[in-house]
Length: 80
Image (cartoon, rainbow, N blue to C red):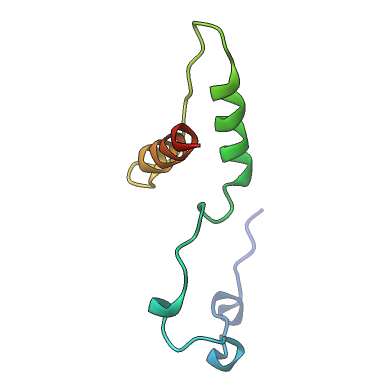
Protein backbone atom coordinates (compact mmCIF):
# COMPACT_ATOMS: atom_id res chain seq x y z
CA UNK A 1 0.00 0.00 0.00
CA UNK A 2 1.44 3.38 -1.01
CA UNK A 3 0.96 6.28 1.36
CA UNK A 4 1.38 9.76 -0.15
CA UNK A 5 4.00 11.97 1.50
CA UNK A 6 2.95 15.24 3.00
CA UNK A 7 4.63 18.11 1.12
CA UNK A 8 6.23 19.33 4.38
CA UNK A 9 8.36 16.13 4.40
CA UNK A 10 9.91 16.93 1.03
CA UNK A 11 11.86 20.02 2.08
CA UNK A 12 14.30 20.67 4.92
CA UNK A 13 15.56 24.13 5.81
CA UNK A 14 19.33 24.34 6.29
CA UNK A 15 20.63 27.20 8.41
CA UNK A 16 23.91 28.41 6.82
CA UNK A 17 25.02 29.82 10.19
CA UNK A 18 25.75 26.27 11.34
CA UNK A 19 28.79 26.11 9.03
CA UNK A 20 32.24 27.52 9.78
CA UNK A 21 32.99 28.35 6.12
CA UNK A 22 31.72 30.99 3.73
CA UNK A 23 32.00 29.02 0.47
CA UNK A 24 32.81 25.39 -0.34
CA UNK A 25 36.04 26.59 -2.01
CA UNK A 26 37.42 26.91 1.54
CA UNK A 27 36.97 23.18 2.22
CA UNK A 28 39.68 20.54 1.78
CA UNK A 29 38.94 17.88 -0.86
CA UNK A 30 37.56 14.64 0.55
CA UNK A 31 39.84 11.60 0.71
CA UNK A 32 37.04 9.22 -0.26
CA UNK A 33 33.46 9.43 -1.49
CA UNK A 34 30.83 10.03 1.18
CA UNK A 35 29.05 6.86 2.27
CA UNK A 36 31.36 4.52 0.38
CA UNK A 37 33.49 3.12 3.23
CA UNK A 38 32.12 -0.41 2.73
CA UNK A 39 32.74 -0.27 -1.02
CA UNK A 40 36.33 0.88 -0.55
CA UNK A 41 36.85 -1.82 2.09
CA UNK A 42 35.69 -4.37 -0.47
CA UNK A 43 38.11 -2.98 -3.08
CA UNK A 44 40.93 -3.14 -0.53
CA UNK A 45 40.01 -6.75 0.25
CA UNK A 46 39.88 -7.59 -3.46
CA UNK A 47 43.30 -6.17 -4.29
CA UNK A 48 44.88 -8.09 -1.42
CA UNK A 49 43.97 -11.45 -2.99
CA UNK A 50 47.24 -12.87 -4.32
CA UNK A 51 45.83 -15.47 -6.74
CA UNK A 52 44.94 -15.34 -10.42
CA UNK A 53 41.31 -15.46 -11.50
CA UNK A 54 39.84 -12.82 -9.18
CA UNK A 55 38.31 -9.60 -10.48
CA UNK A 56 36.77 -6.45 -9.03
CA UNK A 57 33.23 -5.62 -10.04
CA UNK A 58 31.80 -2.17 -9.27
CA UNK A 59 28.06 -1.81 -9.61
CA UNK A 60 25.99 1.37 -9.75
CA UNK A 61 24.35 3.87 -12.07
CA UNK A 62 26.20 5.04 -15.15
CA UNK A 63 28.05 8.29 -14.49
CA UNK A 64 28.18 7.81 -10.72
CA UNK A 65 31.99 7.79 -10.60
CA UNK A 66 32.61 4.07 -10.04
CA UNK A 67 35.53 3.84 -12.43
CA UNK A 68 37.25 7.05 -11.34
CA UNK A 69 36.76 6.19 -7.65
CA UNK A 70 38.26 2.71 -7.98
CA UNK A 71 41.11 4.00 -10.16
CA UNK A 72 41.95 6.78 -7.70
CA UNK A 73 41.95 4.26 -4.85
CA UNK A 74 44.22 1.89 -6.80
CA UNK A 75 46.63 4.70 -7.76
CA UNK A 76 46.85 5.73 -4.11
CA UNK A 77 47.60 2.13 -3.06
CA UNK A 78 50.33 1.81 -5.74
CA UNK A 79 51.98 5.00 -4.44
CA UNK A 80 52.18 3.67 -0.86
